[in-house]
Length: 295
Image 1 (spheres, one colour):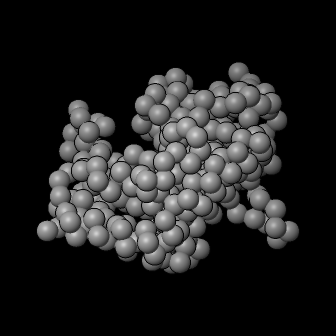
Image 2 (cartoon, rainbow, N blue to C red; image 1 turned 45 degrees about the vertical axis):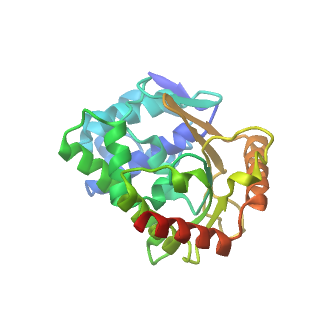
């Protein structure tokens, strides 16, 4: 079965990322992998860069087998290939792509800047192990301890995106003040989490603001969690990939690529950012609430 190259480019780019990472993990060159599936290196390169005119599901399956991909990863990669022709990409958990296959992970790993409004819980990239553990166990109550540990390990690995020494990603985030007072795991966990937030806010690549409850509803209606993902620029200052808006809820995720949608979310973030506390007042408030939990 072939999948045409029309519609959203995002599933194709994600498919390419996962196939490239899987190939590199087993130590195969582009030429070697292409020869094993009897395709040209240029064809495989187009597949890995999201530029394939046609995507053959047979090739994708063969590559997953050759790369020793596990069952979940294989199902997720094939699901991405099947969604390569959709016009706007709504990824529903369990619909072609397994819930445990983290589609967002590939986008986040390639990001140079993440801009997020977070109204309910601390953004995952800024969570402490204890805080994250409470949330993960609540989300996956039937998972065994080793499965929980794997999920937490992945989250810690993802946090390296903003703490690594070489080219850390820029993180811009506004947290709603209620996050500071919503107790996750008890006072000790909260005190540690808020001290960590304050410390992270001192990093040169982190702009962290608190939107106070007294600010009301700056957009005129409540806004849920959203993250705008920007990628690297080339030598001419052009983005190597278009920006993406990521929206998540309990049953799935929506990815927006249209320029007007991305612009609208940037304008919304700027409106929220404008009315939020500045970085110093935000840090002082976080530390004040942390002291209250510790007392």
